[in-house]
Amino acid sequence: MPILQDKVAVILGASAESGTGWAVAERFAAEGAKVVVAARREAPLATLARRTGGIAMSCDAAREADVQALAARTVDAFGRIDIAVNAAALPLGGTIANMSMEDMRLSMDVNFFGNLYFVRHMAEAMTQGGSIILFSSMAATHPLQHVYGYACAKAATDCLVRYAAMEYGERGIKVNSILPGAIRSEMSSPLWQVDGMERSYAAEVPLGRIGLPADFAEAALWLAGPSFVTGLNLPVSGGNQLTRFPTLAERPALTGTDPTNGD
View 1 (cartoon, rainbow, N blue to C red):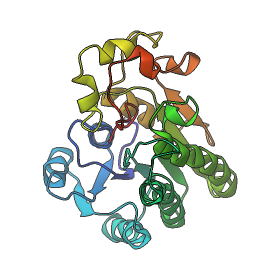
View 2 (cartoon, rainbow, N blue to C red):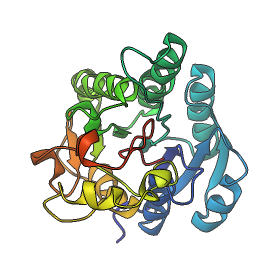
View 3 (cartoon, rainbow, N blue to C red):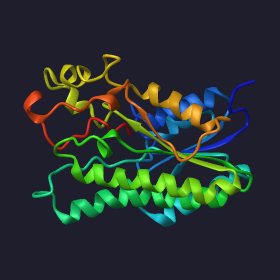
View 4 (tube, one colour):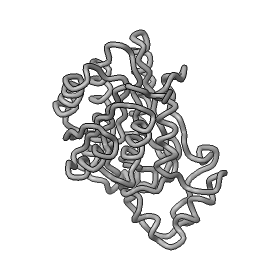
């Protein structure tokens, strides 16, 4: 029997066909899940809903009322939520010296508070236990120049995972996150178009390549299933967590794009 047969899964941040949220939705549907796909960008969701046999809903991850409504509408449609994945992200870069406080607050709103809202309201709707999966970033643990705002928000997300796992464990709810290394996705695609950039990142990966959305979908499937795991910030990086990211001096010039962002 498929691993997720008849499970109800919400995937937020699923509007990019080359992104991790889209890949997770397709993988979960292939394993029998009833899928709700959501994003701020509504237009692409209809295609994904048709492919997965699921339902599309609009949701801005940075608006708590939207996230609360997403949980409520899913329960109205299916009666419960078993699995919830938040792949929504905003890869704002910059340095401590030059990133505006407006951009920093926006990064925190989407990349941290969005995760907080998601955990709070999805857990509230999980009356029979479940699995919540967030997307963090290896940039939270391995400094990557010019993405400090995004990295700080993801470091806060890693802490949220540990506290949420403790708080919701007694209700049978697992809370984990996936930490991608460098990934090929819609948001990171400008980075890989620069000659030599992909080689500079892949050289630091023991398995010799950057990640693909399918790699993270497989990790999410494992966490969503019957795994006896909670409170884990799981690196999915081909071993890049054992090494480092290339420095600015070692890679072609391009700033403000986070290669670890997969939405």
